[in-house]
Image (cartoon, rainbow, N blue to C red; front, side, top):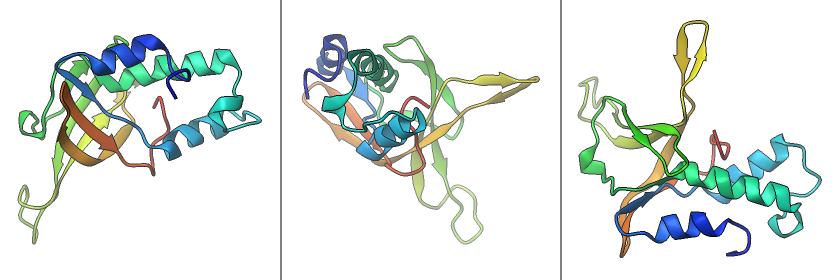
Length: 150
């Protein structure tokens, strides 16, 4: 797999104090299918597309450690290593109609898109959060409902 992504991406993931939101394979396959590429097998993609995947992967890497307890229900913007402004928030569902007492989910939001005075962001839910690696934090995205690169 190392030859698939740019070395810069791998170096960023391995830096001390990094946070990584790895997308699942389903998200990458959905991206490749949306681009209508003939192959969705990574080892058969043209080099230009492999480079693009590496650059998009950097949207999911942050140069500082972000843990679940650092988050609030108000979206906060963080700059990824690709210089994209990404939002991260904690969504807490109501419990028996009481707001803020139910299950919570970490949400990673893509860069804002301005549409006629309105700001729109695509969201990706985190399936597993607060994994601590030897150098930082990992929050694994759900495979369904998210297309790689937002």
